[in-house]
Image 1 (cartoon, rainbow, N blue to C red):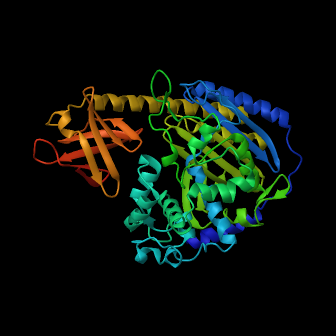
Image 2 (image 1 turned 60 degrees about the horizontal axis):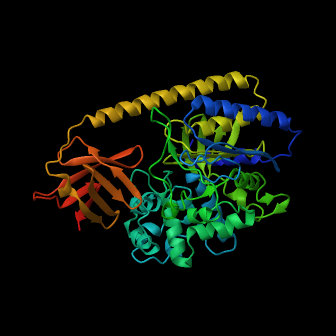
Length: 504
């Protein structure tokens, strides 16, 4: 069967599984008690997840919102249904709906080539003439732009002018040509950079005006500074691999790294409203918020994506949503993770039920979010072996935690035993290094160690295996080599992430 045939078949299945009137619901008090007991047991057994927040919606009813544990081990702030968690790539469905809402008013044509409306100098017309917003937002554009995505999500070293200049660095990917699904942040970053250049509206303003304000998601924002001014409790990302317990991730989100492919913090209470809007095609509390069919249009399959993710199968991607199955049920979903934060957002259109689980650890046990969501779906489906099955699933997760922790400790010990391959004193490598695409690297000697930073990212360098090189984890658990070059008393260039940086 061709990709187009698969999409057509799945579209028919989605129509056949359109929301139906809800039957008599389960005993909600018993559900809440069972879910509470399982979540507490799971967090206790897994041990490395400091905090968790959950929302469950059935039809038009919010049947559960709750918080567990602590938002930040350094402050001890308790998690509640009002605690703001970073939802990472689950942001994509908000961004896509905002752009789709503009299209309903004729302010942008989702199917028009980018060259028909964008006005960024230096944009590659040969690439943009055949690519649309739909292509970018469904990951089928065949384009990539690593510099924009890196600066937007990781270093934060950017401005609107810089991002518009970097549009010229957009390239085609021969391994995934136009029309072929390849998941990345670049499509969303390119789309919102072009829209901001045309309309002068930051992506956060776009999402706030088009989506958050109409739904009443007052505690959801792309500005952490705004959340802090309101006195909100914000869950910090944590890493669970140290033997003596989780630690706060050294890379936390800031305003400059909140971006259109992954840049919102939200609460269980707000995410319950988001689920209700999805399940009911734009209707919230009996009131139509979005035009009929608008929200549903983002759930339609646009790019074939035959893959699996844990217990989930995936068939396609829509506008900001993965379309697949959990067991026999169609599951429309989008997950997200970044530097110690993990979000699970999903709903079943036929059963009219949705679940959001947000946790603040994602090195060893981010899968706890999926496990708890699955427990909810299976409980409400009346799975007969529920408790026995989830006892086994918890043991498996704990086993994966232990194996992951042991593997990380082994790798860290091996790296610590490496001899330095640097031939000069550390001070000789200190300085500022620049690359027109990726920005600025700063290197300093501090307390006998080499400290490497890029924007908001900072790491202590480790020895690497090649001559005149070090290894850095500017993003936790994502090591990359830095190779120095030059024959003088001090190097005059370095290579990082495939780019050459010259000493200023």
